Length: 333
Image (tube, rainbow, N blue to C red; front, side, top):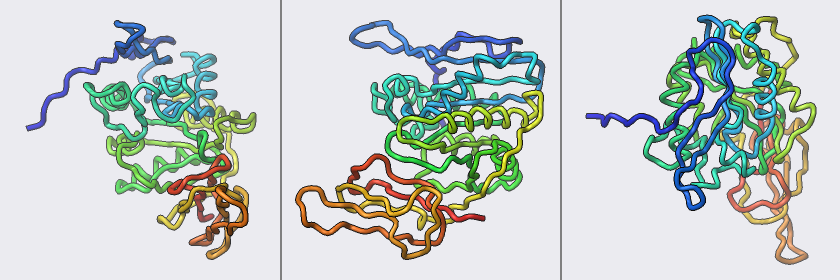
């Protein structure tokens, strides 16, 4: 017999069912040395008008990825109830402790939020956030957009993505939303490890789920921020929530068919790219080398493409450790 879970300890200072626009917080009690009855206050905005569909929009799932938070803090500022038919739930920095620290994982419990789903109400802060999303936010949503980029350790071609699903009607709806996002690239996504991901939890609940990888390097650019802003508007228009038309943009579709897409370093060293993002490659072509850095005169370790394709992601910054992902290839449809 399954154990009944206690209620989430997170309290929303807004009313999800109230008409209009509200700014507030998700308040998570967090007792610590400098504040015995302290809290983590995660910003949230609700914009609601009528009984249309609900969109859940999240950024900062990893705290060193900024395109999503930029787009969603901007959306929370300008979006009005008059512009929507339905409800928009905006959480620009879902793993707020990590976002404030500028780190991928939480500085409190080292939790990687996107490997902590479905979460636990009696776990650490990261698990409690995942639990609240799973049991409170996701059941309200019809469409979910969770922004990602490469953070401090990867750099990506700017793409929106969805996954191949067993439910083909759901899969079609997800890829239609990806196309509407209008990123320069659109990807049929393969994950190295999908266990514990927000994506997997949302998809198992039957949601239309879209994610992104928009650049990286622990910063952003004007171009990438604009892609994120335009993309979220397009997804809302596509869902019939934001009044207006999708701003159509050309996109190139990339497939990630199997684990040949991924290349991992087998040594510690300094990475030298031999191709750049978006460059075409053929099977057997050198794509990078890692230089040993403990002495001069050593030969570099070379990495070769295991398939034909294009370089979709690369390691960032210059030093690598054994086990680091140094390259991801995709196949143009």
